[in-house]
Length: 434
Image (cartoon, rainbow, N blue to C red; front, side, top):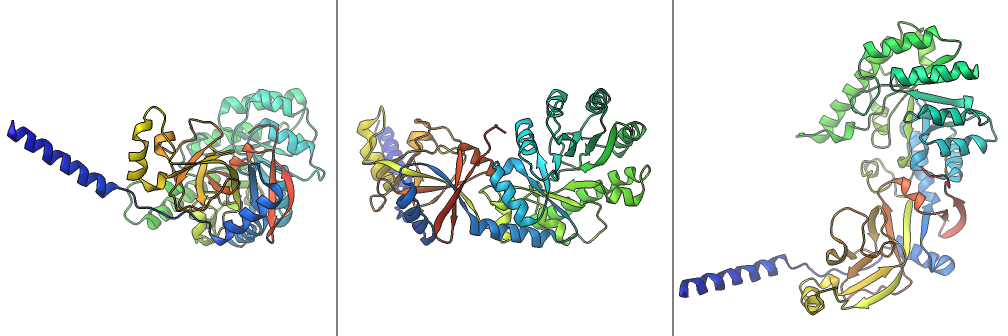
């Protein structure tokens, strides 16, 4: 019995020592100067509501950065799903001097076509659309400007049937698998069969190019030197792309092929085309998130990009020494063990797919909503964050979230535009879904 008591005492001492070892250090909650100023600007004219904020100075910087990286060798194509606002897309098109868009959804294509006043948009599908969706879109003016994406022979045959019904010549781009393993034709031989079908039905189908997304390149597993491994993966992708282009050269002239849209790239890889030394057929580079540099695109920060988009929400209420549901009597012990849970802030909005970036020193309270990377919350749209008693945050102050993706704009109906230390206007976001 004495030995048992001794073991229990030792175990208890060990647990206490471990608890003290793991006890979080108290952190001070504060704004960096940029966010302090932005917090004041929002509160003075737009307080009491959650917003999407777009920093136009940072956006312009990112546009310039992308243009410098792409240079004159490549055409720049704007990925619209990552920038779901016609106003934002139009602004980038004007600033970047491009009419080329990558589109993904039926409602967005429809609205882009209906509101295009130039009759000059060049749209390339980023994923194939069902034939029923295409059939509906053929009733919209200027639909002929779209390069429809084909990933199977069955889909091509369906598009061919529609072209014959409409007595129209449809633009066709072919999806090729350059290593992403997410669909498309995965061998040059299969591509050759599709090219023959298109060429033999040239009254109804026009081959306008290839689309080979390289989104897998940054995620090389089992590397020792990551940069070298990613560079090798990028080269393999380009070599593979060239093999597919060689198939086109058996039917079309080199000049005809060079005039086609040979698309690849993405926000995590677009800058790698800048220094690729070998022969490359790709001439059309797509990027969307690169313009706003959201949280999940850390590669862009190394390339000089700046985060231009933030989701912001004011603090709705502040509770000191907050109690936990069901275990109220343990709350003091929990708050003592982790001093960063001393004050709980309940947001007016939140629960968004993103990371809190300011004020620093704020923490997610795992006793409320878990530490996993998720958007679940006990109180949906009323996020809970915590800080130590040293925090100077007050009700009405703003908390800034860097969204994981630019698509997060769809949480809001409008975007506040921030430039030269003030709010200078508003843009609408896309209303039709994504």
